Length: 210
Image (cartoon, rainbow, N blue to C red; front, side):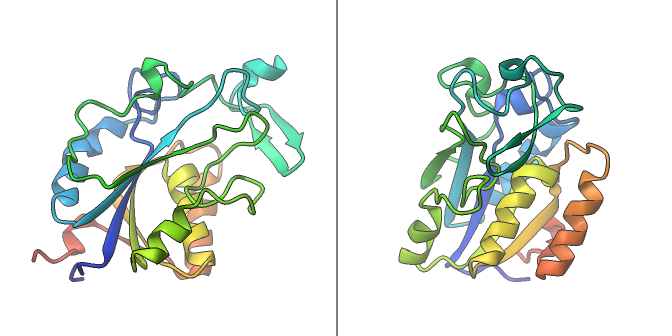
């Protein structure tokens, strides 16, 4: 597959809290940093996302006095998985990993900053309708084929790719440059959703060098 000048790479949530040592660490998440840096250098257009939660966010188990990962609540927009406190605005854990080296990044999109709703997707909040503005930004610039990397494959990467496909973008997930939380059934569910939506799963080596 050859890269085009109108392609964009989306690097999802490569933040300290999501990587080893963080409060919601994805196993082996830091191992993909060198590959993401190398791949990003080949894209003219790169966008980063950043979870950016206020304290007391609806997705935090501590907000409800419940257990992370295993407990859920019913939010107005559906079932909400509860997580450890993570990526709190202005804290070290919310910062992008210092080894992420993409100086030509054109946009850093913050999401999840509304207290009462979570935001896995880079395009919409978890209600599926509240937009982040990313779709308009990409369309105005003629960027319609999107490649996704980062964490977590079965949550924010997956939800972002599925939302992109649903609203008319071509979405391609670079599987070897993503890592999953892997709660029971979440990876299989994500793979099935990708197949149903026609989203390709490729490795970075399948992208031809210019």
